[in-house]
Amino acid sequence: MRETLVLNASFEPLSTVSLRRAVVLVLQDKAVVEQAHPGLRVRAAAVEVPVPQVIRLSRYVRVPFRQRAPWSRRGVLVRDRHRCAYCGRRATTVDHVVPRSRGGGDTWLNTVAACAEDNHRKANRTPEQAGMRLLSKPFEPTPADALLLAVGGRGGGWDALPEWLPQPA
Image (cartoon, rainbow, N blue to C red; front, side, top):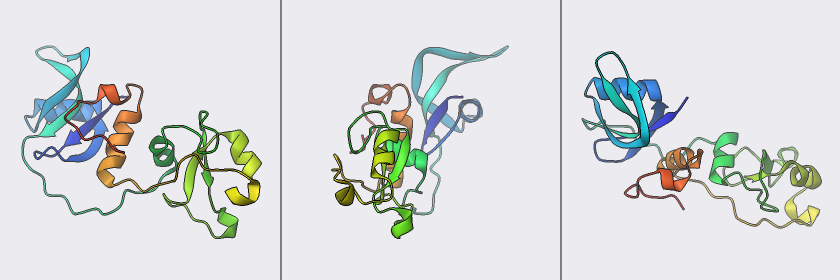
């Protein structure tokens, strides 16, 4: 099922919702479609709506300030664009720079995307001990960047997002 990016009335990214929820928000006039998937439409007996990729709420919603994006394995893979931090090939696993057995935790700065071969080769060692070099340093995305990475990281890539949305680093 497709996910739709939800923007606040101020164009601030808030969350992603299912296609069904996005269409309901648009039909109830609680949101407007800012960006639609080209050529795709949702049809019912008396209504036809473009398939929304980005919607904007009609009224501003005050949200509590969230300083950090929640860590997740999927988030690390999306942040690193499914590329291995050691060799650059397609990554399918998450590697702990400092292994958990040595006190390393599940944090944005201690985890990187890795291919299964490099993850196995590094094993229970630090990259220096394994003689491996990180191609890119892990970083902690802001909550807004994490949302944009999640939406832009899916199939369509960055061209699928409107140019007026800020692109994460």
